[in-house]
Amino acid sequence: MCLKKQDPKVLVVALPIIQIVPAEAVKVKLTNTLKTPVYTTSDRRNAMGVGLVCEADLTTYDDISHWILQGVAVVLNTD
Image 1 (cartoon, helix red, strand yellow):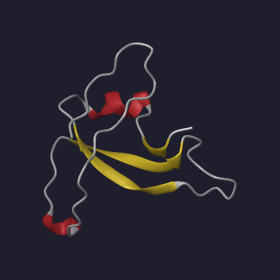
Image 2 (tube, one colour):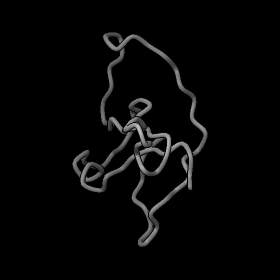
Image 3 (cartoon, helix red, strand yellow):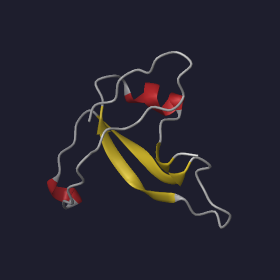
């Protein structure tokens, strides 16, 4: 999955189905990836302050700072 720039005034874009493959962190060599937080809801937390599920490594060919400034996150449940 590669991140691409969004259309103007579009805040939520559906993420295609992705395959999650567990691997040992020391054996994985990642380049051009953004560690994106994965949350359960768009509030990014629930009443107990919990909501972060994990971090997903998404491939990008743009500068990583662009996506950080945009506040990119994956949300599992849309409201």
